Amino acid sequence: MVKRINFSNPKLNQIRLEDGAAHSWYRFVLSYPPHLVQDYIKKFGIDYTHKVLDPFCGTGTTVVECKKLGIESFGVEANPMAWFAASVKLDWNINPDKLLSNAMQIVERANDVIENEKILRTMPAESQKVILKNSISPLPLHKTLVLLEQIQNLADKSCLNHLLLALASSVITNVSNLKFRPEVCVSKKLKDDAPVVEAWLSMVNIIAQDLRQLQMCHSTPAIVQKADSRNISKSLTVNSVDTVITSPPYPNEKDYTRTTRLESVLLGFIQSKAELRLLKDGLIRSNTRNVFKVDTDDIWVSKHSEIQRIANEIEQRRIELGKTSGFERLYHRTVKLYFGGMAKHLADLRCILRPGAQLAYIVGDQKSFLQVMIHTGSLLADIAQGLGYEVVGIDLFRTRLSTVTKEQMREEVVLLRWSGQMPLNSYPFSDKPL
Ligand SMILES: C[S@@+](CC[C@H](N)C(=O)[O-])C[C@H]1O[C@@H](n2cnc3c(N)ncnc32)[C@H](O)[C@@H]1O
Image (tube, rainbow, N blue to C red; front, side, top):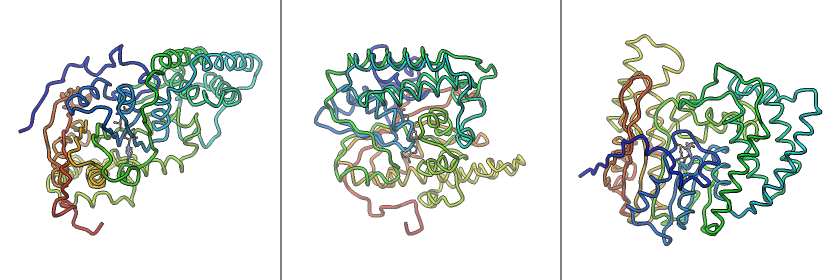
């Protein structure tokens, strides 16, 4: 029997004031809120004797929340910018006074250089090709590059990562021309100038304030590894995880590398198109911009009739509508690759789960591909069941208005349980040797 809880109040999406510390240092728009993690930790009866995993940990909501509650956690994230953000958000063993005094030194030197340097600095040509055009105007970019250089030159080793994350965060929010609606785009009104140093310092102040609050609980182990969750058994030992709370990508056109592009380039995580391609290779194929000819994850669902039916319907509709662009031709393939990648992840995950482990996967229904409905939660539940998981229920977390169809789309929490028993056929939706 599927138990449904109605969480559709939009306020439930926001971070509660009392939950803010560390989460707000750097965050994806529309990440699930910390109190959702609290709700499922409570519901699953998790305490300090257990270990929680987030295999798609993004900017770290699950792992940060677990650490605050004194529960050991482990995150896996393939995008280096998100991995960096989540890792820094877990490091609370920094002296806040030292962080602030170090920042003041940097401010003084950066302001000095900004005042005296007459030629505007810019990014290398290769890096410029990677960011969205007009992401940042020339003068704000110049000031940002000066500040970045001073951080790299003058930061104390213990403070460096926090100071860099503050820069990533303040550049996106206060300096760049980027808007999140919720997809990232460039504003029509480009900023001539921006308070680069001031915005950064105010972010450093927030971090220092939070650190004062968080230091008393810094000893709980929490690690985030930069890795691909389709091969998660390489990251953790057998039978070591009690709970999974996670939000994987959905099969839509959202490109997580695009959302984080400017700060990834500024901090040196991506410096060329070749590096971007490499990064995309490690991600679940959830959008047409990270699908490649050589991809094979679709093998994992080649015998799943409903996924094949949806993919065929998308392709049929494309042909009927006469849509011929390269991206439109990839829609049906993206759906198969997405669910195939998730099937691969769920299959590989089984050996690191303790028998009785409880899992919560937060995913949303989608109609992004020529308006063919994809019930992501139900399909993932079905794949999981075939792989030997028990489907405990599907809760409604919230509904979201689709900007394209004006329909309310469901975001759901798929609740699973791992009994410890492999099914007779370990790979039920695949008809090729793996
Ligand atoms: C919906 S977001 C997670 C947001 C997260 N709950 C948070 O608090 O920010 C999904 C994340 O999965 C990551 N991801 C996609 N494919 C991955 C893979 N194969 N392995 C690990 N992480 C992956 C993306 O980079 C993205 O950060």
